[in-house]
Image (tube, rainbow, N blue to C red):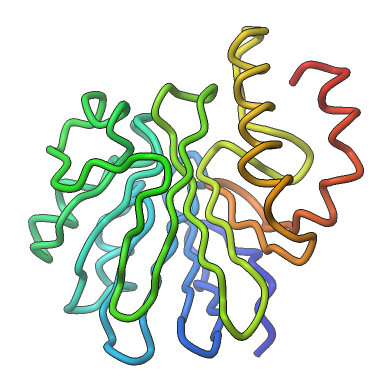
Length: 217
């Protein structure tokens, strides 16, 4: 089956099989959050991005083994099921160091810009983007046999950067970080997996950067 990244709450997950990594996307909760399960093919070790809601759905997706849960930022809709998932699996928790204090479940692994997370033989590079929250992070998997894959939480979506609630300074910060740490360093083929809604690519979004800058959101 061809991966498309279109999922809905109560519907089936979508699965993408890469040479070394399997990515499962599932939608959960009243805010249609996306959660992503990453499984290393070589070791079967698993990492979950955003235990957002609906712990039974996430645990069914995960199965019996989970090494770590990464929370992309401090907003409650992205970690509402974190305590239940950790209690059931014994997984470690990871989040951006600055946002960790806003997450009720203690963070075992505080992450900085440039930190590397490993799941089995897979490496994910952390980028810290300021604006949606002070400590939001995105994760980059640079597939050695393909293009990069970027898990953006609420920092980048099809059609724009994340919500900065009309705060010009927050928008300027997020837009600058999205440009400098994502668009300036990753190719158009990079696949974007956002915290809500459908996927996109950097190539699809890049032509619209001046429009985003002009409108201020």
